[in-house]
Image 1 (cartoon, each protein chain N blue to C red):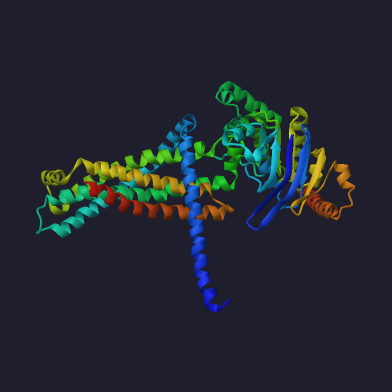
Image 2: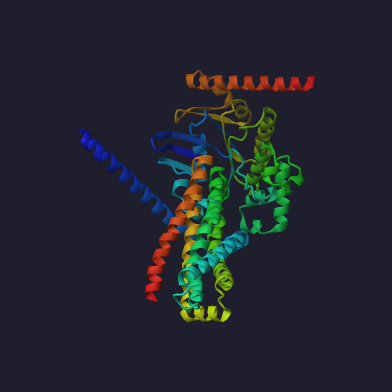
Length: 263
Length: 266
């Protein structure tokens, strides 16, 4: 289970999180929604100890993350897969080497045969062809980079998966593919997931519960239907803004398809 | 508040801010060094990566180091001829060329070139890795960025830079001799006599120790600045320039310090 208890965080004078509390139960997928720059990624980085809260506590798997030492934190991180917004692939390494780094158990990491099998298994799970393993990140498209990032995150068979804007920068078709992948990994691997996003449609598709982060606080938490029915002005404002964006995207997609037909 | 008080507070505030920033850098730099010393225990991780780095940095820098040291040797030889001809015995040229290269020009020029070449490379590589979240990714995989990224770069520099300095010394002396032979008519016998007459074994140790100190500055400062890069591409650019300037200044300061400490001991 993941628990955030009254978490506060500020950068110089900018208050990013002001008493945020959230609970993610085992096997559950929670989408953390909110406009850009509201502190969603900061929250995610606190869960795996990349950032420390100024006040409050973060508990993962029964461990108080801010109080963990270097070795304990490394052990905990072995149980948490983290998918970065832009993939954060090591550009001097091949896809296979990137995924191999995700194998956090040292005995397994040093076993060539195991690694080879695990890399192929991870590529299959994220719908990538086996020959992608030999490529460098620079040779991949944006969507493929995200999928390799997910493959690296699941290579160590984590108990928790944290997704930082998994669909940002992707066209609607690729965003759907990634959303489908998040659902599939949840069902096949049974991991507890936190998905940070500002894409309402995708988040409502993959999440068991949705939390809206608004002006440094959690404004609403609940199942997608409950959030959609909410009369809270902040929730309505956020949902309307996203709806406009979705309409613009679908119109431009239809336009591209129409131009394609004419050509 | 009077205008006078406001004018005094301005510089005071600047000094206070500068002091705080310096203290912050010193503190974080010290912690990074401690982290690196601690990370040495994870030798299985850093040893293979050190060999890769050493090959890339050493082999890649050899040509420019030899080129610069050759010109330094030739110019020293010509200037010695210009100043000494007719006033001192010609074999003195052998001493001046060899001692200048070993004691000063070899280590300092090599370090300054590598501050630009290796320092900029390290700061830019690590800075880019920081802003593209590759360092965060490494940490999130439970792996130490210090053992994977920093120690290999620093150790590679510590191994390669003194070795390159010795190559630079030898090249400078040989080219210096050939130039003196052509321009002054210095014989090999005279050159060798002069070089041997003033040479002490400590000179080579001094050259090696000095280049080791420079290597520490050329590697740790850019690694620290690159590792702590912020604010995207602009931050990477700033870290790279600062790394080259800071490493060069550190080299000059260490040059004065090591000369005072080691040559006074001599």
